[in-house]
Length: 292
Image 1 (cartoon, helix red, strand yellow):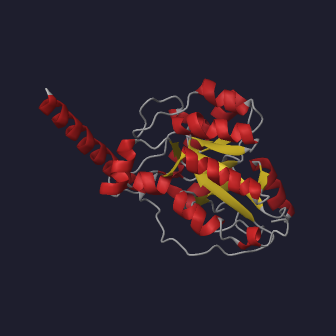
Image 2 (cartoon, rainbow, N blue to C red):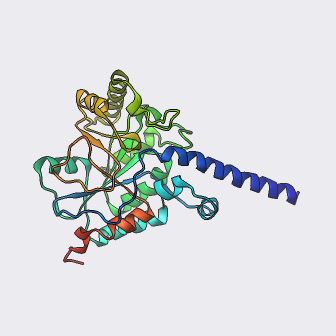
Image 3 (cartoon, one colour):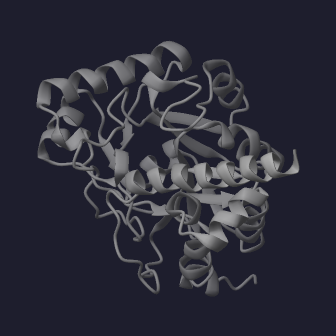
């Protein structure tokens, strides 16, 4: 009996490694080499982007020690680490912005000092379970980029997605707003390229329209923003954005947002334990805070 249990445990571990390796293939789309330090401009915003906020289990720690799980290292933070990061920002007098405030200040050409905007992509259930309670307790606003065609899916790319009732609960706190992460174009093709940038204009336009309609129907949101799946778009995507009334597009790049940037290619910094320590804690905007 003990021998069978050991075999079952080993099989479970191997399966876990296999699953994380599969996730790793998808996650590498749009990868760029990390930089050592963020540029500093006083008139700017730090746009921090998260994907998963996990309670790290013994299996996660095993994978981190014995393999190279890209999903865990690059696209995830632990619940404790997320809490620490939010407290660090509060302690350093970050000025948290909503999406509407971010867009308003960019249009005006002037941001408050130490502006920080927090967003989440995909909206899988780890955000509802772990990030949502922390942000609610700390009274920090955030934006969720929703894959509207996958809301409530119990197994989308190995993720359990937040359902409509839970999203509405988040929205009704007044701390959360939502924007588009496409309706159903968050996939890779057979060459591991983002499906969004491979599609023809008509398909992209129809997808964006459907996503906008979902946001309007459920939360009365006149959507202005889209986060590109895997971090990038192209001219065809830009044309579809314009025709569907989506003025702002967000990428994944280790850069700050300044007023002069192209509205359709606004960078967000993908946050994990490494990037927060490497880029955010060393950013001159916080070093120059005379109150600390």
